[in-house]
Amino acid sequence: MAAINSATLTELLELNNFILGEKDYKVAVKKIIELAQSVSNADGYLLYIINDDDFLSLEYSHINSIGFDKNGSDNMTLYPTVYIPDLRNKELKSLAETSALNHELINTSNIYASTDFDTSISQWFDQEYNYRVVSCLTLPIINRKKNIISIAQFFNAHDSNGKTISFTPDVQRTTQSICSLIGLVLENRKFHDAYNQLLESFIEVLARAIDAKSPYTGAHCQRVPVIARMLTTAAVQEDTGPLKDFEMSRDDWYALNIASWLHDCGKVTTPEYIVDKATKLETIYNRIHEIRDRFEILRRDAHIEYLKKRLANVDTQPNLQTEFVNKVRDLEDDFDFIARCNIGDIPITDADIIRLEKIAKIKFTRYFDRTKGLSWAERDNIKNLELYRKPGIENLLQDRDDQLFKGYNHGELYNLEIRSGTINKEERSKINEHIVVTIDMLKAIHFPKELANVVEYAGAHHERIDGKGYPYGLTGDQMSIPAKIMAIADIFEALTANDRPYKEPKKLSEVLTIMKNMKDTGHIDPDLYRVFITNEVYKEYAEQYISPEQIDDVRPEDYL
Image (cartoon, rainbow, N blue to C red):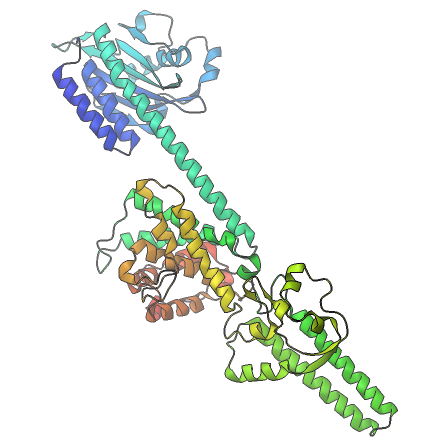
């Protein structure tokens, strides 16, 4: 075969278009090697791959006449992987090994006619499969950096009558030109893999940094992707109902994985004490101790007053002692109540608010200057410094000027009156802000077109299908199915986590009861929730990732 004829040129053009549109590099490589075989009129071919670590392995083997065809690891019996530098010490090397070491093109009309090469594998193959390898063309495939990345071998070229002949110089050139496309495909694949590895490594490092920021949420960013993958798999497998037509392309899966790893990346801007706030009075530490010290002062004052009255014979000793014991009992009861309010497990009632405000008005005497030891920024927040410097009568629970700092309200009574949980409205706003930060951070990353959905998937995990979520108040109709999956994954991981300081670990039945209520009240998607329950996604995850003590008997039908 001389120059490339019109038919071959047409095949090359079609192959070029195929390569441009094909994302699976193995399919593209197979197409190229098959065209090269056809152009060279060879009966068979072998294609070796050289990886970045200098290992040579046989990836494809094919012979038309005997119907032989193997891919990947199936070729290990024919040619075990070898480390190329070790071949330098090998006395006789095969054609492929010689080509790999020397970057040498070898065209031989009869491989058995020369004693310069190791032909033991060919001999074994001929005997095993009743075949005869004669002519062989061995081509090193080089990338743009002049590194050898593959070896292509073609054997037993045929003429128009089917007779085995040598590979002519024209055929050699044409075949070599076609095989050079394999180099481009493999090189592009390496660039693509390197880009993906870099992106995924960056994503994982960022997610782990977010988890490491809080010792109490150390696995959240790692486990949400697991739940999202499990639920998405179950949804894709639905063949009836509203989700029967739901499908995920390879790009969709990849985008969902990245989004689930990065869904909380905006938390890098959220103060740790808010993320980890275990009690209402906690900032950097739990300020219940300050209030306890004030109760200690009041108890000591009561004891001093009792002793003074005894000395002054104001009343009988039993009466004075009874009065003192009653005061201590009231103080202890009031402190116990404040301590319970600080935990946040039980919602605060109107009656509790009234009692808190009554206790807050109990007075104690402060003698030491309150401005000492403050930063300049804290001092600038105080409207009347003189009141802070002079001894004074103060409330037992306080909402002071210096407790209003950088947009946060650290007032003691203000925080104790939080109706449910431990987070006040300013802190809640800061937590919610992490979604906007997440979206802004992800928008700043120039994702390729196939990953354009990452921002939507990651940024919607606090939206609700009834439109009452944040940051945009999207309804279910405005959200994609993967985005709604993210919301369920985030909620379920948070509810089942056993490392949160602001709540005790919940039983699986408690978690599902909460989620059923969220489904009934328009928080999460009911169709996905049904799949989550009926396919026992919760059970599959629980068996692998939550404490055995949290797993109790659950009947799926009770939570639909």
